[in-house]
Image (cartoon, helix red, strand yellow):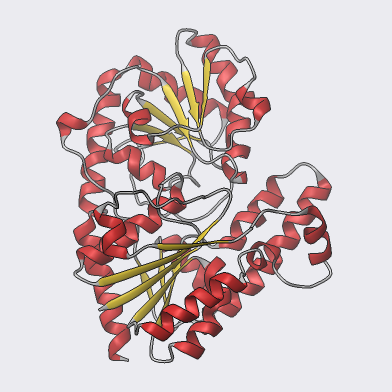
Length: 399
């Protein structure tokens, strides 16, 4: 089949979970022996530069990008309050991107056009106009409005909380409308599939998680016995959770285990955080290679209290044999088992206790990582996910 994948950010470089998920979807689609073309929105946060020597992925996908200024502008955000539209979504509309899409649709015919998130849904009308026979699949990475709703509930500043609720309500309304306009939805987890069905009727719904590369045991290095955090810090749920961990949890861990180091990495780390001096904490900021960073550390913490979808970084860390301590929300949709391949902590005391357990029981920590690799291999291989995409596409075409 011939597939067009529309992305709200370039899948390369894979600097955050969203990029990784889009790249993984493309890998699975190609693995399923489909022909794939990618058109992506490039932004100041997610720039893209075609290298002089293209790799096989760029050649196979004919990846093209169009720059769109999606920066949050205070005046635009204020004026948007009186429009009734979702400011989160409207920032991704671009005349240039739309015109590029039209040229592609006029030049080629596609069996399926896959929208990576609702942020490229503003182009549905263009697709229906210029590619009438194509089936449209929404790849739902999250139940987007749930992220902002949870952020509103966790926000202590009343003005921010009020604004987040407005964003959540408008996103919810927009998500409902989009679900009526597409031919099928590929939800990233069962939990998200359930949330989406509560919003609206969906003609065809499949759960297709993220495929993750599995690494041979001899490639899984375990160097320093240390804690680590990795995540994009321009995503509110990540920053919110990390700040909580640094303020509430780390001082208690540091008091009991003063020799233990906590390495923190993430793009767009606030300057105040990066320059702060906290005993035992090493602020790395943005790093070039997330896999190398994981290899150099042993225990991953995921203090996430808002957000939706599958945390791709958790799956990546599991595939590298890492012990992981996460909130219940952090592992939502993954299907892993507490104390078998992951540890769950939802408050200060639990995070401290599980960290101490890992440090004092290195054999248990290692076994946890081995079980994590087996779990990812059984449930998230590229072969498995490629088959699911092909089943969805074939069912769509038969309609």
